[in-house]
Image (cartoon, rainbow, N blue to C red):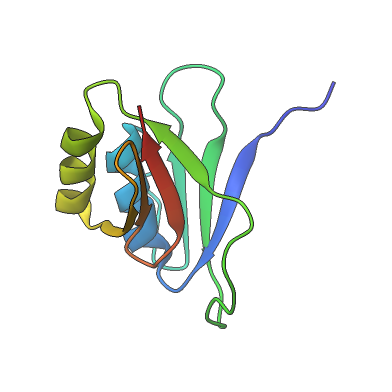
Length: 111
């Protein structure tokens, strides 16, 4: 059986993006993380870990994969929390809000 070990993000500054996702998801940022490479251990059991690596090129197109985050405490409260961590709202559709992390990677927040 094969399983997902980690999800990898290419980015300009691995540490900035990893800090955001560690705080957003309640994961642990590896103490050896740097701007070149960073690792976030998923909280709890079963979720894939997140790996971030610096690449020289900028993103050139929309991501074809993204996270959908469940907001059990309410979408508006979660969006506010994520904005305080550095995310921005890209599209607001009421019960589904598309956001971007500090480097513009899209993700959704829903109930």
